[in-house]
Image (cartoon, rainbow, N blue to C red):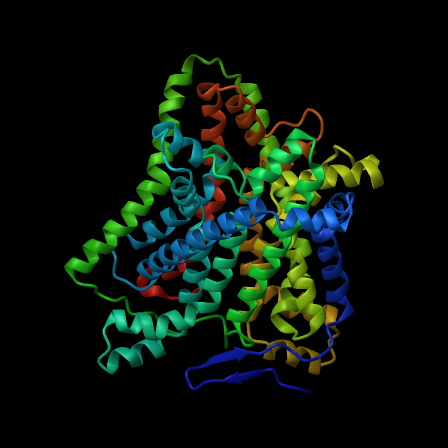
Amino acid sequence: MAVPSTYSPTGAALSRPHRLRPPAVLLVPAALAAAVAVLPLFYLVVRALEGGPVELLQLLWRERTLRLAARSLGLTAVVTALCLVIGISLAWLTTRARLPGRRLWAVVGALPLAVPSYVAAYAWIAAFPRIPPFGGSVLVLTLCSYPYVMLPVAATLGRTDPALEEVSRSLGKGWLATFLAVTLRQVRPAAAVGGLLVALYVLSDFGAVAILRYDVFTRVIYTSYRSSFDATAAAGLGLLLVALTVAIVWAEGRTRGRAGQARVGGGATRRHRLISLGPAATAAGLAWAGAVAVLALGFPLASLGYWLARGRSAGVDPAALGAAAASTIGVAALGAAVTTALAIAVGILAARYRSRSARVLEQATYAGHALPGIVVGLALVFFGVRYAFPFYQQLPLLLVAYAVLFLPAAVGSVRASVAQSPPVLEEVARSLGRGPGRVLRDVTLPLAGPGVAAGAALVFLTCMKELPATLLLRPTGLETLATRLWAETEVGAYAAAAPYAVLLVLLAAVPAAVLGRRRSAALDGGGRAS
């Protein structure tokens, strides 16, 4: 039996994927998840080829299409780079540095996930009507999405053995040199996963770029669909967006390399020694964390508070507000459950098996995530009307849309958690006669439980904020906080929309705070990993 792990003198294990054939207990549900993820592509291919392949090629080679591709990729590259800088620096400050109130900063750093991009964009454009479209889009999307990098990097820092960093310090290296030479190497896989999620989020975002009037693929696709005169062109642009997604996923796979990292046991066996930065560096760290918190949280919340104060006379119905909140929680919980269930098999395959089928299935789950919610919604409307009419405007179709959009978040969390767990325990279980199903139930899933829970919380959070797909696919009469907020803002009733926006942010803050506290609680008393 091939042993896929090697061990270093520090006690860390390199988790190498199995060369064995993946079992059917994983392949079948992973294939189902991949089929769900690529379902919208069926609609795009059908609509894009309605005018023939020649017309499609002419569309893709237009100067305007190439300009849109450059604008979309440029926005994605800038936002991803900024998120890597902010996310890695905040993760290090709250896990390695002796920063006053570092546990509080860890929780605050995760809370921007609770602010929908369209809410943040409105807050900024309402205060600064002449904000540049590109600069405003970069600002809003960076402040809303940097926690996608911060959270996995901080979790990795909490699990890594401090021995390598201590050796570097004992050789006379300062904290900055140790960070650049040792720590960055340890967190590179987690940073790559976070950067991938940021890139896909930026490519698929519609709300922020629409409000800030910055023309990228999502806004132009939405305009084409809404005009209803050029659906074929919109489908062609959607296919090009999928191609960009595949290229980004492939590039992330190359940076990840062939080996992941795993620890022997549940985590670090001793406490991390917090680094004293000195008065000047400590002040700079506090200023940096505070500035990010003010821009990402303070300003949008102040804007919402202003409109809420002005909207006291708007006559909001408390019963309608409560019903919208209950619908939001219920639909998001179901969406998180379905998405996480589909992601488990894909994440385990990606972390444990080196095979073409595993790679194809993993990459297929990312295809739908780069599509804007409006495209996924319309694709599933087409599918429901043509092939599954009993499910049209019913809850199951909306849950499928959530799974298509948010599978990568759950797959990334499961994959990272499984890759960190020691594969030798699964080998021992197999050597004792346990079948693949029992090994999955008794060994793999318990070890990956924290990552699975974190992925479910992240999906629950994003489902609450999803707007375009919910608008198109929700059952008749179902209103969520996001749809009510959009309905009021469409007619310029910002004061009436404020209660829905505030309650949406407050509800979304709960899972965001849990994600932050889940890993910061393990750092009390010097950084002991849970």
